[in-house]
Image (tube, rainbow, N blue to C red; front, side, top):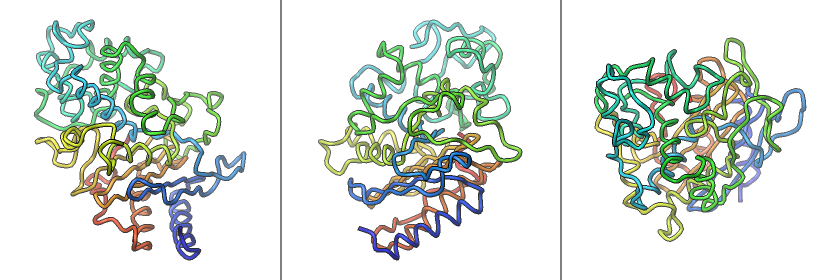
Length: 362
C-alpha cells in the first residue's frame, strides 16, 4: 500500500511528463512478485470529453504487442507445431501459397527465427514500410504486393532491421498452423491464461472506438491517429490493452511459480536471449542487461512495458506522442524516476538504451 507522500511523488512525475510532451492522458500499472501493487490513471480520456483516465481504460499499445505475438509463436514451438528454423516461403515453406519472384534470391531463405529477431534482410520500419502502404489491402494482397515489389536487399540473418512486416508474417503463420484467426488464437492461448482477456484488436476510425477506449490526440507534424489501418497491424501493433492487462501478461510469462507460467522457463530463456546480430534485441523483446522490455509508438500513442529480474514489472500507456517519438523515451525516463522515489520497488538498471533517441517507432 502506497503512502500519501509516495502517491504524490508518482503523480508529480506523471504530470510533469504529460506537460512536457503535451499528453492528455496516461495510465500505469505496477506488479511486484506477480501481484499488482499499484494502478492509476492521470489526465483525461479526451480533451473534448473530459472524463478522467482510470486503470481500466484501453489504449492502443502499438509495438508492445510484438512480445505477445512472440509468446504465441513459442507456445506453438513447445507444442511441436513450429520450429524456429522452419522456412516461411517457397515450396516447403509455411506460407507456400505465396510465390516469391524468381529474381529475389533471398526470400526463400527466411525462417521464423529471422522474423522474430528482425533479421529478415529488408522490409524495415522506414519510409518504405509495407505496413503503411496500400491502406485498403488485406493481409493476403499486401503480402503478395510486398514480395513482388520490395525485394530483399541482404541475406537473411546478416543484419538487424526492425520490421513490422516481419511480425505481420508471424501473425499469418499462426493462422496457417492453427486454422484460427490470429486474434482468436492469441486470446485463447495467451490472454485468457494471463487473465488479460479484455484485450482486443483496435479499430481504425473514431467511430470504431471500443467501450472504455481512450481518444487519441494528434500533435503538430505527426500522422493522423485515425488515418491508419490499425486493425491490419494486428500481430505487430494492433492490440488494445490496459496497463493492468500488460502486467498480468508479464506475470504469466515470467511467473515465479513454474506452474503458473504460459511457457517453460527454458523456452522463455530462448525467447529472451539476444540474437548474434543485435545484442539488444531477442525474439519479440528488447534486452538491456537483465531487463526485458518493449516500447511502442503510433500517431496518438506512446507505450512501454518492462520486466525486471527483481520481480518488479510495469506498463504505461498514453494517448498522444510527439512527432519524433521522443515522448516514448520520456515515458521510460519518467517511469524509472517514479521507482527511484520508491526504494522498496527500485529496479537495478534502466530499461532502455535509446541508441537512436527512441526505442521503436511501432
